[in-house]
Length: 118
Length: 113
Image (tube, rainbow over all chains, first blue to last red; front, top):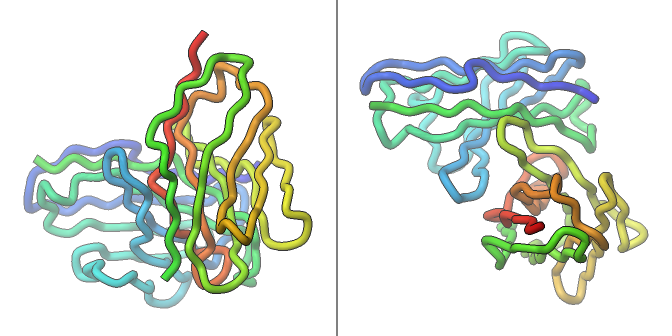
């Protein structure tokens, strides 16, 4: 099946630094990708929709200046956590529905990136 | 707004026994419903989905789910659980379509020998 990768799989950083997380669709193109955040023992919460060639759409309550999203190509979306603080520590997951029509019923999830901010 | 409730945080089932994981949703229109499984180090994997039609949906790995509109439920079942089924299971509903998903809090399945 289709594969979505994330890099890095885990990262530890100091408070105040920025961290970039990559999400790649390895064998398909995706106009749209989604970024989720998962707290321990909690559900996945949608943070934003990443759109290739245009601005990301953020869910209510998500700071767009804090979580910068860039969808530079049809196979790559990046999430940058700027000036990270300990409360940003979490598990970040991306997903990608194949295609460019926005009509794909299936989407594939990356394995997630665990961020720990000290 | 859409919401999903998975009332069971943990469930322990003996290997070979049957399984039912509960999911209730809140949505004003016909929902797009999904069950995903999350294993450590792996991305969420789609087990099955319901969009319309037959309310009993067959999925991968021997799982099935039944959509009951009157009860706003989409419970996941498997007749005989295998040790490899131990994982976290998430029910989700499609928000404004079927791509933006609202997830339940998950049910962790433990399989005892």
